[in-house]
Image: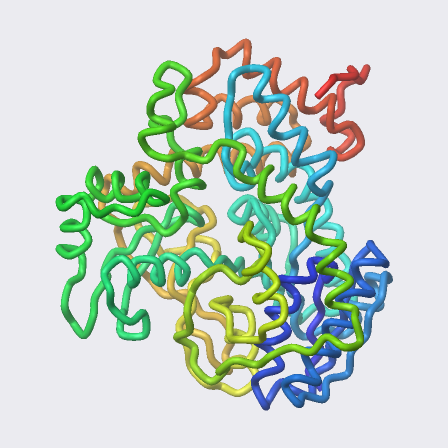
Length: 471
């Protein structure tokens, strides 16, 4: 029996979507599902949801819910990781509020920038502890990581663990769906080739039945039809010639051009949602108790949409929307999501070939990037996940990616060696932070963040005398 372990299964909405994807495959409907979380209450909700998903799909999995990580991982064939270390409070709030005191604004703060650096500092040690368990309890496991900051986490795991890890992100199919809507064409008719680094990958080709769709995308810019939520990315298309996979809100904080104290008008002009992640979290927290009661209600049943097609609507199904009616509809509907996890597991188990996008180490895959974590097409079949060679990227794209790779490399080095100076270096070279703050301000900001995080960061990075900082 195939054993699939969910690490951080208390992320109930995301776990529900992945469970629906997995159990909709007849070949996986009888799998052993191990749900693990350190929060017993949220785990209980996810266990109830798992049984309801199985009932709705007519699946007969063996479901185990446990707060014992070793029990969950013992003998696992696949481990889906979706943890968040430190949560919204205190960790994410600290990552936003302290930089604000220095005039440094963020939108999401989970991938790069000072927020991404601090999230990595909290997260990588936990992932490495989990990897030690995997090496002992399930050494052949395929670790499918959904945890941000994606590139830093996967890079650190590749250096410090023997566990096979592939990082998974839904930005490639989500963006394909957005562009299909912008163009008025069915997403199932679109083919593309993407490469780069997570959240800074680009569509090298974007076609419909062999027709290049880039001229049509450029007409959207020329004719003033750019969606207001996507102004940053269409501007980058205009400047670089290619469309980036991650959302405008994310991408705006990976570069030095859009969020600037010296040009506050840019935030309005490009419709950049400062503090977006905080608002999203506040909405989800405010909605959770009602949603939990709904999910746990014995009378609640899930509705199954067509799960046969892998070309479904790629609107977010991860609880990120802030419309309660839509969120409720998402909660009570089972439909195939654009997440790659179930497709990888199904292909590995059945041998059915597919192409997905995975975050893996650059070992001969992209010629003009160094050895780092890259996002590239991967063939998946009975032989596992096999990254494919892309070759050289357009030089302007590689140059942009390298500014982010520098920060990732220094953060990984800091965490794995315990050398605090590399944490300062990572912040110094971050494009957005460097564009806004002086070297002295960057140094002080890092110190303040480390002091505020306290025991959430490794001991080597804790200041000798913790300062109490009012948020």
